[in-house]
Length: 408
Image 1 (spheres, rainbow, N blue to C red):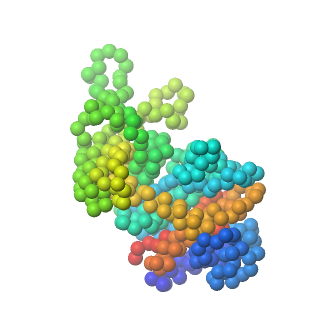
Image 2 (cartoon, rainbow, N blue to C red):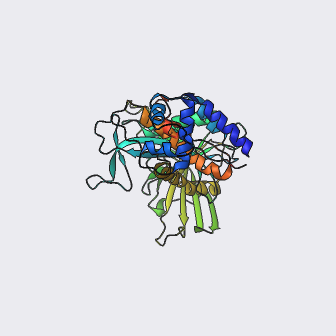
Image 3 (cartoon, rainbow, N blue to C red):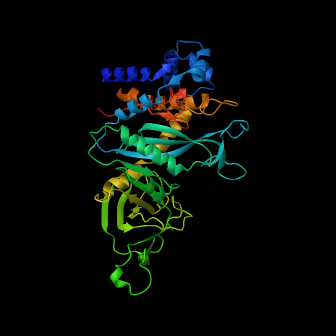
């Protein structure tokens, strides 16, 4: 175990191509120091043997080999059930009016003028999930989302990138889980050429359509492109489920999962929009998830609607899918760990050039989150923070290395 940890640390150090020693010590300090009021306080940690000036120098002038770090992170992902979550986390910069590249994003707890909206920078995180009761994740990639960029396109880019880096020993097709806010059909179109499964939460009032009847049943008019309508909120439109799965869970009580195969949506967001051509039809599986209890909650649980997409010859595993969506919320704990304990959003740069000091600090934070866990299991796996178009990893997670421990 210690030898594995030593090999990982050596490989991580080789990813820092300029001011590597300073970046590496800063990574250890962020991991061990805990919450601090400002960056210079990290130099007071015993693991940081340099002056506080080296922190700013490393963040401003250090360089990280992002490709090598991505490969290192992916190589540590050894689980036999490759399940990943992708979500957006914001770095609030509400009062930094002169900072470039700020956008307006949803925030669950902070408000502006009575609305759950903040100004800041958005980052798309990709993390591996553990299908167990702990809340640790394995952050693999973080990419900045500039204002005006479609989050579905960024997520698809991250999926393609991680698929090329995953170890070939995975025998199962990777599953990527998304919460509400993502366009399920657009994601499916973007990864149609990849060997991947998608599981996206959808609104409870969405409408889908079955395959149209055969042309022989149509006497006049052009062939129909859509069949019977399926409305999630109207049980009278539901045909008998294609598959049903039920189980009793110690945390969620009675769990009922129903699936309807071969349903598609009428999408507006596609590459041919405005060309007067036919809309793409992407068949998938609509899933209804219902539980009788919530852990630690007394309120009535809501019915969850999901949409699954995968290769045509693959049958969805309902037991895996409902567990994967429940475990998706573990990434929220990763966000909290990085921001509150690893000081990811601690720096307050004034007018940094895009992808400079502030974005280096993302990577470092991630490295620490993971290291925090690895200190318990002694095997590290960093999480990579990538800024914008792979410019440079923020050093504050030694750039991009949030480490997550992989089970031995």
